[in-house]
Structures are given as C-alpha cells and as structure tokens.
Length: 99
Image (tube, rainbow, N blue to C red; front, side):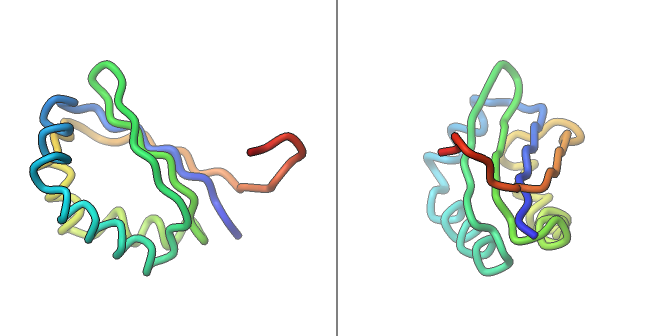
C-alpha cells in the first residue's frame, strides 16, 4: 500500500544547501538507492531551522528500512541534521481534486 511520508528534521539549513551543491552526485546516488528500495517520489524543502522531505513509498516498511540504514544516518548528519526527525506516515488513498 502506497504511503506518504513527511519527515521534518531540525538542522542547519545553510549546511544542508552547501552539501546539496558540493555533493550532488552522492545525493543522486542515494535517490537511486531509494527508488530501488521502493521510493516513488521525493521532494526537499527548507524552513527556519528545519529540512523537510516529502516522499511517496511503496510501503512504510520499505521507508523504515531505507531511513534506518547506518550509512544514511551518517549522511544526514553531514547534511546538517541536528536532532531526531519527526516522521508522519499516512496511507496515500487518492481523492478527487488531488494533483
């Protein structure tokens, strides 16, 4: 069952943006790994002191498997993560008016 995942991570957004610019090829590799594991869509956003990821995954279990990998946890710290992420996982049902 497809799920929508919204993850808000407290962190240094300047460090995040610098990481994205300087290590874009690594980010693309991670995206390809996520796709292979069941990610169907992904978008980053930043707000005051937070990085937000909005994803679609084939299942909550596949997302949990991806996000809990030690290598990803290390990369998140390098990206500027400073604390525990807040994660919301909800069933993506599909309703009229969505786009």
